[in-house]
Amino acid sequence: MKKTLTGIILLMSFMLSACGTAPTTPAPEQTTKVPATSTTVDVVSSATLARYRENEIRDYQGVRLDPAIGPADNSISGVQHVDLRNYRLTVDGLVGKPLDLSYDDVLNLTPVERLITLYCVTGWQATMLWRGVQLSELLDLASVDSEANTVIFHCADNYTTSMPLATIIDNKLIMAYQANGLPIPDEMGFPFIIVAEDKLGYKWARWVIRIELSADADYKGYWESRGFDNEADID
Image (cartoon, rainbow, N blue to C red):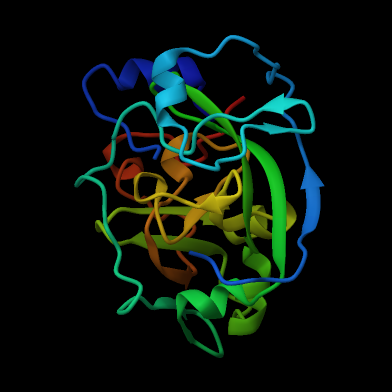
């Protein structure tokens, strides 16, 4: 049975949570989805204003965008600082054509831009304009085996989480490399964050270094193995 957001927040009373320069790319496919809970706010606190980066987009189609740097670090091992000179993204497991990609390789794929809200289990939320690549394109390049049913995300800080393959395909989930018009900051998961739309923050894997295809439908990641709901739906 899916746990409610309230239940997860209660669990957080004794556990910390994990919410968790680009080259020129083609014009993205734009898909705007504004959550029903989003509202335009005219008054912004000084603390929030201080978190905006220089030249960060703050408004998109009448919606105020939140800073791409969250109010607090809640990662399991601190903010990771990934060196692109040594970075590789691996896509492996139950695939016919394992991938070993550079940062630029990913940015050369078809870009997609979407307005999506991140909901953290600690109670805060942030709406941002994300730009990235649709995960299904990466998976197609890797030629996923028919027995695969789960996608496991491995991160630079050894964090893991997973989602059903069908969820990723059906919901057209993306892996982002920009937020609000700029490369995502280290605090948000540079070089790549999984934009797990309609999922709670601990499904938004940051600092992604490996995408593993698996047949283990019951796989539990870092927080899921510690009692968090494996579905993580925001409803």
